[in-house]
Image (tube, rainbow, N blue to C red; front, side, top):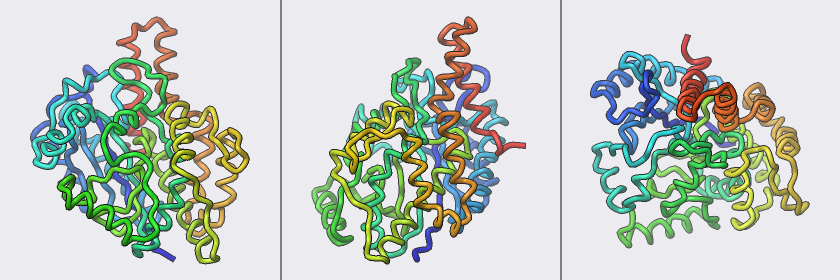
Length: 377
């Protein structure tokens, strides 16, 4: 059995508590202050100065992951508050303009912007990445090929980007429409072996298109830095409970797929053409309009699909000690993902007479409060 350790990375946007607008310049000492309080966990800058990224330590189970992630959110919230700011765990800001944002002064980001131009400058988006420890290279590729099927399901639970530059986009994950403008994004390719994967990567390196595999930004990839499989399709979850639910789901799915493997079975793989249809449905509708069951050839309500998956991974959830986190799926389905909750706040505010700008600020207030819920005493 692979180790299946967990590591969670989240990206946050920093807002001014008074105006609710994004900051254009992170306070000079803020990152140092965060790192002084975060111990062995990671706090670092991101592409834009209004963004901050955190990464948990390696966690043996979901209980450790909960402690690590809530500690990081607590640290960021505490330090930000001392500067009159607050973090929001949402994949887009409700009304910020990307053209107003400033890039972080870092060689890697300067190179990215030079290569990608407007496609990179528009990346005013945040995501969540879940690393699961799989030491064996061949196993990592085999499980990547199979887990790809479930990426739309994970995205649907996580959607948190319905607004873009003050507009309701009609999408639950506008983030991915921005990110997909970059090369080497979207669903991963399928490979027969780790060596085949390496050969493809090396072609791009030899051609001078990238330095290493860290600039492969697929929804799911073998991490270039760690012996992990890294799931990247998700929007960042505003609720820490939602984030931990999805991390537990990924861990359980991989354990289930490994159990199939050792019995000489495997999850059926489908073409990217078909999986992309479900990916689009998750971008557009979140979990409200269902996904395609490819075996049946029909759209099935998302609740039914989740119920089936929860039965499939029940043994794994018990073995991994994450039954409570996994059961939280049903709460997400009942109350809606973050995108739906944001839209509800906006609709209530406008129904009560708020102007659009005021209603969008109410959404930011909601995001500030929910980002810290359960993390700050």
